[in-house]
Image 1 (spheres, rainbow, N blue to C red):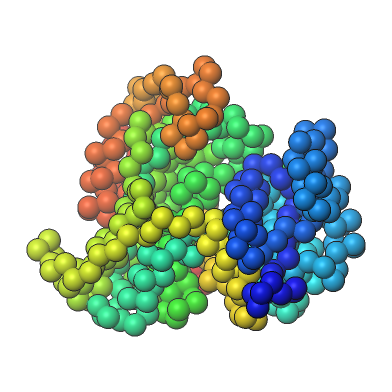
Image 2: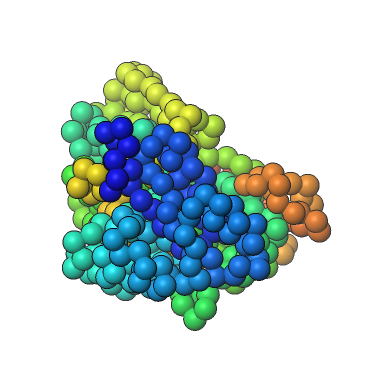
Length: 416
């Protein structure tokens, strides 16, 4: 760990440079300008596809390899952290290999496709003496850290319930962006790609984290009830409901869909014995803290999430954890509960929604990426889905419990 003017420069390597790896590369560049972290090596498995990226990295002195095995063999003493940004099917294999080779690891969210893989990752982490950070960006944010402090300190008493909803439109362009979008498996491994596992996974993890009884802990769970629906022409679910009962009896309700014409939320409410916290991450995010859990509760604090890049905060905290010989804010130990939830959620069948309950809308741009190619793209939406989910959020009901004609009861799974 070379020093730069008294600041320890943490050395990173990354497996891959396409897809979400670009976000990590941008964050690393920001941290490198400030002397916090530096990219020293990268794996580029397809040099023809990423010829320009390879030239750019090589010109900066970044060492390029064709496989992670080759990188590990040559960089044993010159890299502190390996970033694993690839598809969910690669997370367990690459993270475990990096830990066993003696590196700290930053793995992109979610942890894995199935809980058994998450357990194997935890076992490898515990045996290695290194940390395995997970890129659930919101856990590194100012607002979730402040809400966690309210919960752990019991400033408003004990947490009694929490609920989150999000309406995030995704068109056919989103599902054609790679080979695994909207799929249950990829390369022979379960991935369960879906709103709760991918784009909106952060917000389920936020509730699990805040409900944990210690500052670093996430909640253990007694049971999970789930419902999965498919309105779009995909293999997996695009609309989901989750009701978790934690091991302290706290209900956590999660309602999400991509089959909407809108971009609303996420919105989360955390209820306490003597107050509540209302959180949203739209824009810079906004949090309001009330002294009691009623409609006319007294506003006692409010704050934004700030304009800091969360991707940068992930790199900053990971680098600081190496330098300070501590755990990062989000690790395998407090993120694997999310994978346990997804594993249980997909024990409920995926119910197809008949076309008479949906509408096909033209698309002129993709909400999540204004530069995405939307040529010929369309968005299949569920009729009246926005007011339905907003009512479910207020009433804490599942789709089937509202009586919608396409709703089907799901499965309750006991968890330990």
